[in-house]
Length: 166
Ligand SMILES: [Zn+2]
Image 1 (cartoon, rainbow, N blue to C red):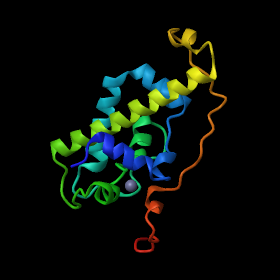
Image 2: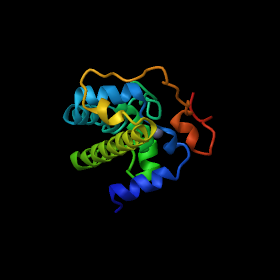
Image 3: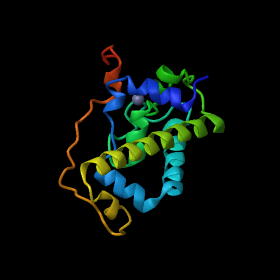
Image 4: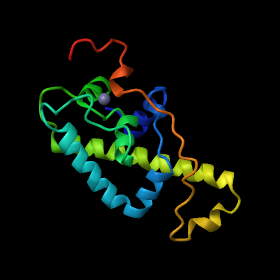
């Protein structure tokens, strides 16, 4: 069984998965809500979107943006049961156990933690006064640079074309 570290390392080698990143808005949201709240959101999303034996719209149930956990779900290949099956051999057509759900949540939170860390490191390198800003509450940062590469839908990661369903 692979560890979270191993999973993240494997994901970083996928161009598609490594293309997902938190942006300024995601970071603001994270800081505003705090880790416990984000984790509870992650639990809810996993329960609603992944846990059912036959999730609604599987393959399309996870938006590409709008919540840091959504990004994490795509970044970790925990976006749908098809990807969970492909990457982690999680069987299809049965409900996820509590343990499986918790493992997914842990992976999502690890991904978010690493993203946040990398962003902070980059910011500190970019601006010498970043340390000063860090402690100031109410600093919402710059929204001007919210540029984002637009990834393709997660189903396109697989080589085969999706002609099977309408
Ligand atoms: Zn997927």
